[in-house]
Amino acid sequence: MQEALFSTQAASAGRVFALDSQTLIGIAIQLVNAAILAVGLGYMLYNPVKDFMRKRTERIQAQMDEADAALAKANSLIAEYDAKLKSIGDERVKVLEAARLEAAEESKEIIAEAKKEAERIRERSLEAVAAYRRRLEEETRLYIIEAASLMAQQIVAQTIDDEAQTKLIEQALADLEDAQWH
Image (cartoon, rainbow, N blue to C red; front, side, top):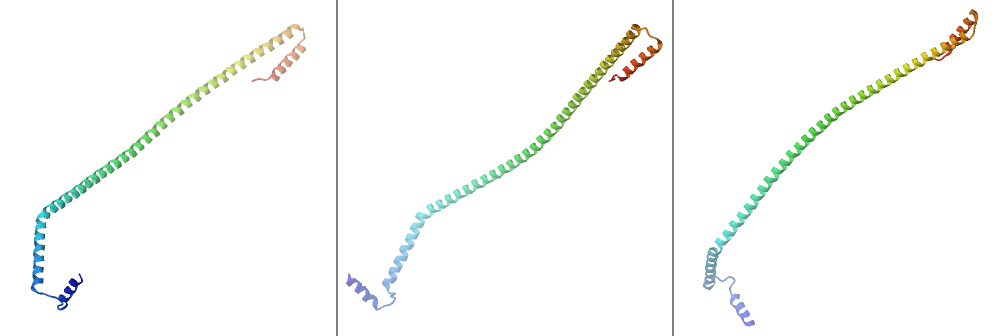
């Protein structure tokens, strides 16, 4: 092995860059081999690689189309939900307005019913006061009749003269004036 190394060193020691025929033939053979290999590989690999790249491009384009369709669908759903939210907001306003109007009507009905009830209570109170007044008038009339009959009994029971009779009448009138009148 050392001998092969020394022989290589000895042969190339005399020249720096040898462009002899052997080197040129080796280079030409390598170029022809590379060209044949490139052409052969081109025929063998060009169509499969071209098909692979076409399929890959189609797959990527299909994914982009699907993404665009999904984005369009998402945008339409967003628009639909926005419309629904707006309609819900409008519906909420309508429901609140209807509830407010219904509450106002119900409030008016309650107030009207309360006024009617207050009027009925007032009428019953007036009737009670009128009945109480009639009862008092009747009691007063009965009291006056009783007082008059007592005076008549006293007058009849006593035989008195005019002076005593005048005195009794004045006393009875004084008693009537002192009595409480309601």
